[in-house]
Length: 270
Image (cartoon, rainbow, N blue to C red; front, top):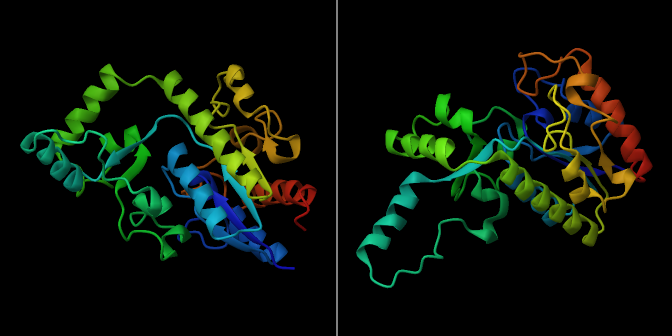
């Protein structure tokens, strides 16, 4: 049987067209004859990852493999559309302040994907009517990727937000809650899943990871969750700056693929 497996996450779980056939997703596909549906995207926030999970349920995948990400990821609404929205706030009386540009029915298509060099961009449900840019705060502030989308006014607003309003502990709480609820939706849909929680718990840094947030995932069965002490990217993989997925393309893709194969086998995917 050829299984259809969705891969959700950030850069760690994507592939790189500059290094074809080397990511763990491609290795899994070749080794096991699985149809790997890549939904992961570099810079994706945990919010975007939850939308990826919803898309995996919608397209009826047989199993879902999920990487969480760090809490320094946010969404910025499309500046063109949000400018029009704000103009209406100023021009109209009794404006509905609950109005917005995000379209729930569009699911993951809300997120801008086309700026990336990976297999996720091939899906026809991306890039049509995007409403949000999802990435690290640093990429928005310092990177070149969004130079055609973000002007100086938006950048100044982001700097003020970071300096005066952003709280990573508060963001981590929101992220663990929404990821936990996305896993609940997988369970209700009877979709086998495997979720790596290392990144959202800050476990791949040199600091001890945030133990108090483990309880937000405490209901998930051991077969469905990978704790940082079981597998940690920085500890168990050789890390480089070459490929977008961060690990050494010569050996570490196979290491991660073998680990995930074993865990999926435990879920009946073999």
